[in-house]
Amino acid sequence: MEQPKLHILVVEDEPDQRALIVQMLAANQYQVESADSVEQAIVMIKASAPDLVFSDWKLGQLTGMDLLNYVRREHPDMGFIIATAYGTITHAVDAMQAGADDYLAKPYQRQSLLLAIEKVAKSIALKRQNRRLSSELSQQQELVGLVGRSAQMQKVYQRVQRVSATDATVLIGGESGTGKELAARALYQLSGRSHKPFIAINCGAIPESLAEAELFGAEKGAYTGANTQKIGKLEAADGGTVFLDEIGELPLLQQTKLLRFLQEGVISRLGQNSEIKLDVRVIAATHRDLQQEVAEGRFREDLYYRLNVVPIHMPALRERQEDIGRLVEHFLKLHANQYGVDVPKLSRDTLKALLDYSWPGNVRELANRIERFVLLTDEEEMVHELNAAPRPLDTARFVLPDEGIEWESFEKDCLRQALSRFEGNRTKAAKCLGLSYKAFLYRLEKYQLV
Image (tube, rainbow, N blue to C red; front, side):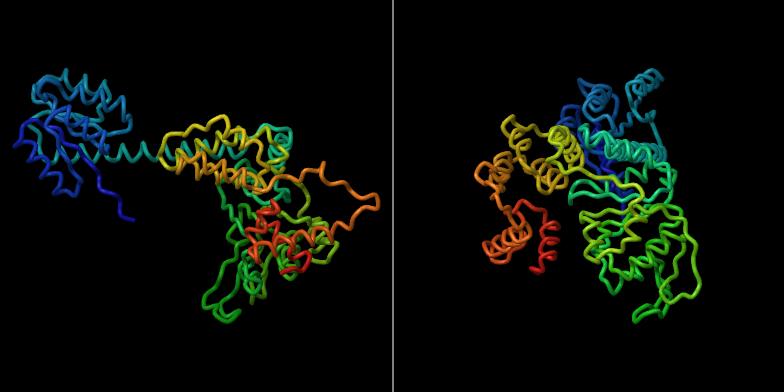
């Protein structure tokens, strides 16, 4: 991808000299603007901050040092080169001590100017890369254990820390949006395999006809359209970690092959007679009740026990309401940094609405709503949507009959009514029942309403 052109502001009060420098830099494919005074330069920086300022020392009543002090105060990472014609080393020393990236003594050669700019450009790129890496590291640390201090999350952290250094297979359960993949990545980041691949696979998104080739690979000619050898996801993760998200959606045939891999550590590509030995740690996740899936014949019992060596349950957000405020603060900072805007403030009434909401979509829904708020800063819209969402049933208005109820018939009827009310629109029906879309689809399948 082509790198964006370096944006340079030339500050020089001598018109001919300024025009010469601008022409020279433009000829070398830099994006150049110019100013004839410190005052004009500051106005231009406020309007559109350049990557680098090249300034003369003497600029009317003010000096390049005045401009440098302003730049370092307001834009610490902006590049700055200063030029002086006064023949003393004092100015250069003062400028470097004040934070200039480089200096040139007049008269200077064209090549000296270009080399100085190239050197500072590399320094700017390095600063930006370091800031990005620091941000990623900070986010990684927060994902591992800093967001959420409730008792339920402390149990999650403790279990992650205890098993991360092992190769034990882990099964992560919990509703959609609770952060199951984040827990898997935390296990990976804290493990000795963190320098090796992490391959995430959504088992529910793979067409059944392609599932075997996708997971285990295929030899050339193994099936129609297999024009080259295909390396499967498990083989690509050799030495590292594979995350099997929505493992409950995996077809039974692939469940059998996965069980063999977990037992023996070997796979065979589709169309291959020999076996390949792999070293892969497996972490799986599901929002389904796998024990119920086993009971109903949709999931292999022996595979369930192989996967469920160490279970981790991700709590629903409504079960750890004391974490909501901390998560709101985290996502405000995260998305403000992502979009390069100031962290917006939330009023007390909006915070109360966020705390009172039941969060059927869990942390993912909270993150989505906060991201939209950071972009639009529309509290009124967010509060209106929260208030318009379905509320938990007022149990004072419902009394369980003495003879009890047939729960599955009741649930099935609620699903039918929701679909009917919204003329088959599943998204609206799920929202009406306070269910995530995936949880709603699961119940439709369970009662054969699809």
